[in-house]
Length: 243
Image: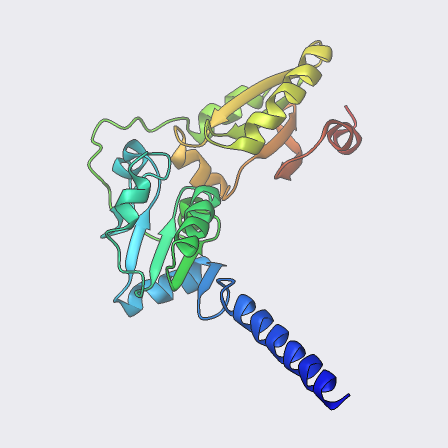
């Protein structure tokens, strides 16, 4: 009985040891992968000794970026090679336009063994919305985009006007588009549909304080009567707008 008891105790101890070992290798212990606010991101940036990475396209980067940021496009096949040039034991601050691509980049880096990775929640849109500055970048022929006066002229109609602030890379925006087009086609006698690209109208986005997309606005005779930030389905849209 004593021998059997010792064997059982030994098996329990070994099992516990294996469980602890497996838990310790899960990637959570001793590492950080966190989305943080503009304020905390800026504080960590000012502390220095960090690696700042912009994961947007070269065109986006050229249109304005955080000072001294490296441009490693997450959609490029070279992204995996590029991040290998970084020090895994040194803090990485990563950002994109609205926070989605950089969150994916942070996950990839964490999976590669980086010890501390911080993602800018809301991305450049939140950064701009907080009044923070950017380096102008190399782009010199960037168009100013739509002005507030242009928008006001578009929505000043007797009909309802639905304005969809979106971007080509925004998956929720693309997912919602067929639904919005279906509704506006069905109600075209009383509803117009306007799409505004966030990348091509940065000044307007900043002036309106829009810091994330998808973002919808509904106007009647030039007056804003409804707005919604984030994804929405057809039934909720119709229920909220009463169209």
